[in-house]
Length: 301
Ligand code: MG
Ligand code: MG
Image (cartoon, rainbow, N blue to C red; front, side, top):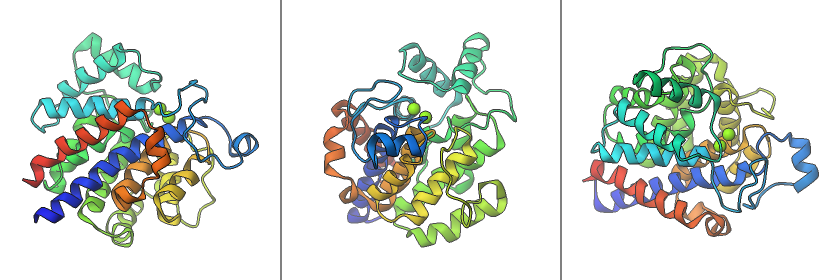
């Protein structure tokens, strides 16, 4: 890869990580609200102002971003490898530090890990939440340039610590591979043809086109991904895409985070709204940029 191309890939990776944090911070304000409640209170919610049910400071992020950063640190400590035991320990330390929010499946399976020492959760039909998908970005960066089979294995290694479920796996693998496509410079059209269409073909539950607008998406990974894909595919531009998805309400910090990571990788740094970047917690902003580069740089050398 040429120097110029590598610099652009690194910049897109930073934009993806910042996009994740921006979507989380934007969406958390309206998490669990209905579109009607959001409209009544904000008109269109499009500023990073904190608040919400978690009473966040403006620019504060939630588990979607902080779990991703914890996972990324574990991967860096293992020289770019994704080891389930290291991931489980990192998540457990993250949980002990009393995060502002935590998903039920994450808490249950991390408590089980504390008891058993087993870093792989038992397979469960019920564990189809979006908690593993929302934190997949560091794995996408650390496995950039590896074979598709290897990327999929790395993704599952982190996901199964808390979510051992086929639908979660399908979503996590798709997201990591789609982020990598965008980092390489593939267009939305190409990614739609080569990545999104096959996902829906193999897993018809994820179908999102010619379907009613997915409003109030729950934490079920299927609804989450439908809302995210409707926004990313049908709404152009980074800011418009995130505004569209968080104003659907529901699990808005997580749909915002996932849409932000995809749209960040697709549209790159110039597309991130300066007012949002300014509002984002400075320590988080720095951590996202530093970690994006640290995770990806070895693959570009
Ligand atoms: Mg959250
Ligand atoms: Mg959430």
